Amino acid sequence: MAVFSNGCREEPSAGDAGVSEAESRSNGAAAAVSPQKFTFSPEPSMEDIRRMQADFTDERDWNKFHQPRNLLLAMVGEVGEVAELFQWRGEVAEGLPDWTESEREQLAHELSDVLIYLVELAEKCRVDLPQAVLRKMALNRLKYPTSKVHGSAKKYTEYKD
Picture (cartoon, rainbow, N blue to C red):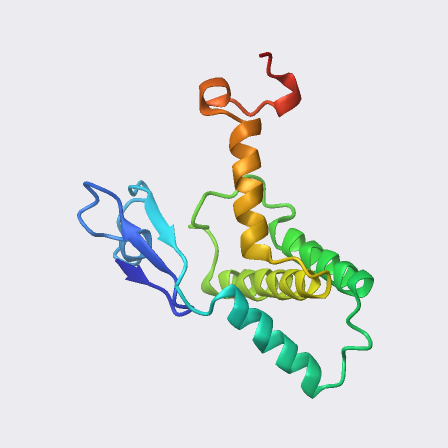
């Protein structure tokens, strides 16, 4: 298992011989490496992130600026910064094998900004994000039943009953 500096892990797939893509590249091996199963680190939790951002905002007396509309616009701006990192690159392979460590770190910063604003927006709107995700995933399972959609990218409105 590879553990990155940000605490995230990649676990080898079955038959992978335990060699991560990063290890393979650093050893000069060919780019054709078995896919890795990526998992997030267990901490911080969504509630930890909410609390850290709330403390950060409180310490700076920024709550008067952090209203839902402003948080949404700030988050959209951060999504734009993520988009800039991908702009003009063409297709990007999973795991970003052609990206430098600096580019990966910049992406991690920008994605973190998006998540922080999303969590704070959810807090200000009183949306329990983890519970909302569970409800939304249940709806998605109904909207996109495996028996109808497996291997297809069509929108749910294109499926016939």
